[in-house]
Image 1 (tube, rainbow, N blue to C red):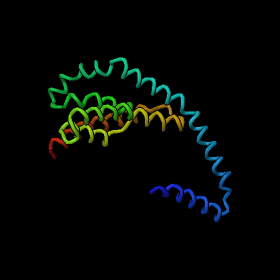
Image 2 (spheres, helix red, strand yellow):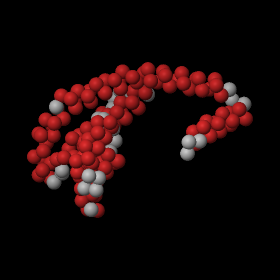
Image 3 (cartoon, rainbow, N blue to C red):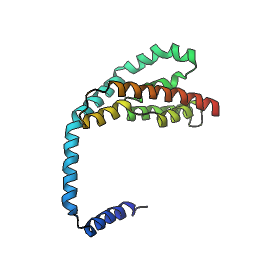
Image 4 (cartoon, rainbow, N blue to C red):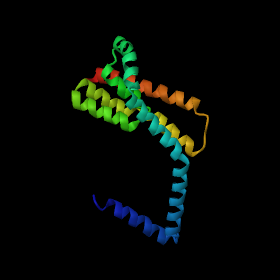
Length: 168
């Protein structure tokens, strides 16, 4: 297993040499293009990271969960999964930390642990993905994409809980 990456790199180098490609020149051009891309999307990523950190640290997420808990209780959605469900479209790392907390508190084989795991696997970090991909190709109008992606995330969260309830 330790030799997989060296073998892949060796194969690419040998293939390039056999095809008479200037391997190092192509590599440096690709690296240069990657740095340019990073430079163009870095401000957007920094803004997103700062926003997520402020959302978590300010207590706004807790206030939003407290505000929505009567609705989730009425429809039978576990309130313990609400913070993760709300943070998942914004931050993969933050929602993974909340997933780990649910698994630690309730166990991976509990109803909440299973629901949280399915939610983590069936939803997307929507704002991050839209930010990175659209800023890379300089698309400014994201309204329809964002609405469709957030609806898909909402449906995934609801169906995740329903499926776990049905299967277990």
